[in-house]
Amino acid sequence: QVQLVESGGGLVQAGGSLRLSCAASGRPLSTISVAWFRQAPGKEREFVSVFTWNGGVTYDDVSVKGRFTISRDPAKNTMYLQMNSLKPEDTAVYYCAAKSRDRSGGTYRTMREYDYWGQGTQVTVSS
Image (cartoon, rainbow, N blue to C red; front, side, top):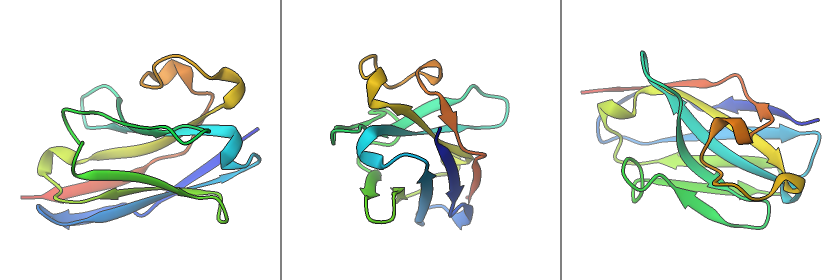
């Protein structure tokens, strides 16, 4: 069992930065892949980025690549999402999600691949 707790959301002006945290408990990060998804009002939840259990990193190329950076701190068992050059269209609830290395494979980009979810943290970018 894995528990995930997000934090770090808030209100920021366009062009600003935020760093989201996802604290994991129950399993070390070396045994799980952790992804960030986001859901804007009235829209479906969408993939943002993933850091796989063995160190692979992928971003959604269209919306966030070049502006967002995913990283992890094994000592704190925490995953981070550094978001720079924020735009109003980045406004959403951001969720972290995890799946065991035993379920490696797939695209890592779809919600159904993940077994564990955090409660989400709101990010609002004003213009």
